[in-house]
Picture 1 (spheres, one colour):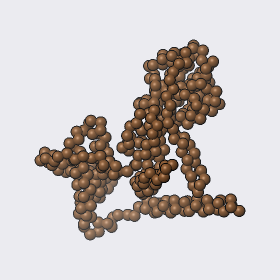
Picture 2 (cartoon, helix red, strand yellow):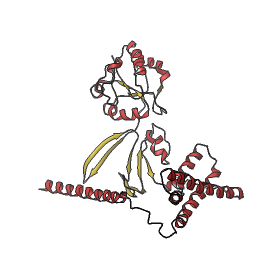
Picture 3 (cartoon, one colour):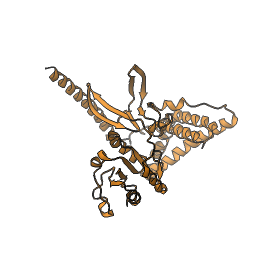
Picture 4 (cartoon, helix red, strand yellow):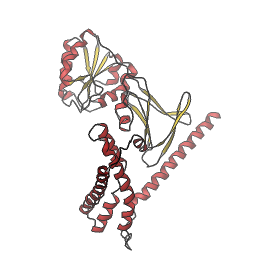
Length: 358
């Protein structure tokens, strides 16, 4: 008798309606079915008439796991099932369902499991390790991606990327995404990476870096209409920021001149405008011809912001009302703590090496 684990996301199938329907169908086909949860939720299941057992106890003897939820549910379960070579069948209860094979209204197709004849699609996974001083301090596996980022403090990180054959490249920016083909439709795609066939055997490295957006820009031929539109877009961008942010500051109780200074300070448009324009063009929502005005608007607002701020603060005594924010001290303390923590870790690694030598 084949053993099938039913694994509903308790926040997607809150009343276990879909899970119960699938269990009834599989029980009629003489499968051994057990219900486990991908996430812990105290007391869940008993009041709904189903016995919930721990997943780690049942997975060792399972022949198939059916996940009821979105892609996040399958990604969460991937680590567990991969260690025991148990195939996963996804029933989509989420919004996208890229990784699910069935929709809720297709549960009757579970009857096809009766003859146990189906194709198993293999997906590439990542084996991630963090090494400090030659010693592994973290290990995990991932079905979608692993991200190396700059952390909580704003700074540029510089990474050297190596393969078995030597150094591949260098990356400077906010970090880098190492993605499987399955994860190519997630964070990697949002950062400008390619979409790859899920069953391919490729490792994608996508830099998290603003400049990568500019590499894709092809400016169309400029004409009088585009130039006029660019000027109008830049003026609208400046005015809407001054008025909109100034009104917000007014509602927060700031004075007239302070509201003006806040509004002018927010005029500068940057990478977010380019990201939105790039995604709009990629989805066909915005013609490519409008990309040039957006770039001109970003450049103009970046240039005029410090100029306008100089006039906003030109009167004597304009800085007297400003108060030093305690966030400055906290930021400096955070930097110092980071430095101290790194120093302590390095010192500890050196002491451990000395003890091993002795």
